[in-house]
Length: 227
Image (cartoon, rainbow, N blue to C red; front, top):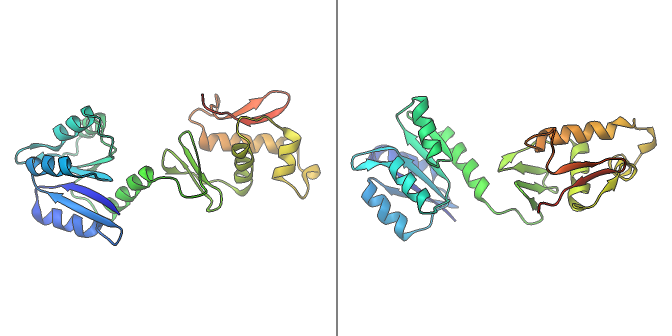
């Protein structure tokens, strides 16, 4: 069960958020002050921290800085009524993973919470974790740094054969047969290059200088193994 820690000094809002986020597989621990927060964080482990910034006895932003300085890597969402751009920048630079200004929709908060918990979840059985990616070919669920990536069926086939043979150079002719098993001879030669380019555009941080899906000139392609 995931346990979320919520620091919110507005008791009514805190109870509302707790009720919205709690469920059969999720619990919420609520604190109303920095003193309560420090005691709770010292005693428990949490899957996610939601911290209000403006508190009667201090700042949730200062608490975040202290946690990050101490090596705490748990995802953090900041809640605040401060909606100036520099406030958001300060929160993100302090180590927040997300920043939500009040007033906010509970539906939006739930979606943001679910996104952070997915990023911290271990890969599903049968999924392949490589670098910043998690590829689940059976469920057709593909993620980069926790964010979903939409792939066509042809892109999925190319990715699968490359990842399952990562570190090996696969000739173009072999990849053509794998991608179009019922008629590779009738597929245009540049179809593979186009598919590679589209896949790089979806997965690589810099598609013009790929780190993972590399070209081996004169032979084919490889999914590079990180050193």
